[in-house]
Length: 83
Image (cartoon, rainbow, N blue to C red; front, side, top):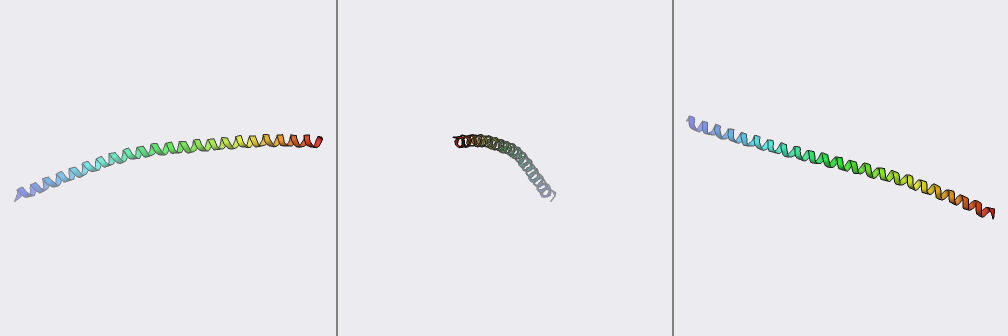
């Protein structure tokens, strides 16, 4: 009777070892995926910051252009009133 018990224990140990091996493989895969997602998140954040910076620069350029146009319009008004 002791032989079947030993056989079952041996099988259970093998099953446990396989399960532990699978867990370790899954952890390694999840770690690799986490690193990839972290890299992607960093790239997306960098793009967001670049886009925000460009939009801010665009606003400044537009504001400066509008100020110059307004100054020209005021000069034209003065010239028209003077004649």
